[in-house]
View 1 (cartoon, rainbow, N blue to C red):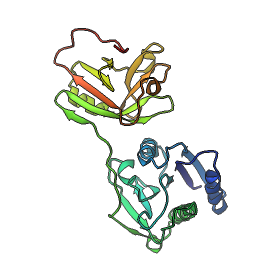
View 2 (tube, rainbow, N blue to C red; view 1 turned 135 degrees about the vertical axis):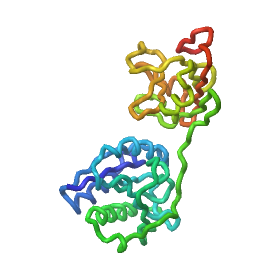
View 3 (tube, rainbow, N blue to C red; view 1 turned 90 degrees about the vertical axis):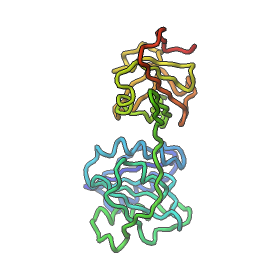
Length: 270
């Protein structure tokens, strides 16, 4: 049984998802198709990459991931096949390759004659190529190795002595704001020192990091390292991003002190 995943910036009410699934099943009625997300913001390859990089390692080898985000195939954006950890990612040459994994792909192939004008028919090329890969066809017949492809660079925190300047990189379905500050970075810079977390400005501050969401009472602002090891700002049983007006690229600043600040800070605004 072949496993395909779909990550798209399509609206669920459109026909595109059904058309692609139907195309796959018409070729292999036993195929298993997994919807990773169809709620990626239009053309937002950074959001698509964040979702994929935090779930693909849970899939078995030889899984085919179809990434239909900013997916138009043109002369400048032909179809790529990325091989990462024995899995395959099909994407247009839109920069996502540098964002899916912190490691360089094991191999990158450019599909021959995959340029199609901005048209939904490009998905035929995605599906047909996926079956070439699944069937272990000779790659030389339909693609060629390449090192010349667009790579976006993940947004990383800026580190100074006793200071981490990070930013929000993802808003999840609970309206929690996930930042680009990792637990490892926090420990390396902080060295166990007291700290304050400033959200957007000095207006909202946090001076502790929860072990669980339930460590805070309902309505309380909190910080926690989530399941993928990134610092997350949330409100217990609330909507942090909405209430604090947090968006992608909103600033998160962590300041470390040699001694604990004199007055204990609360988790509310000034």
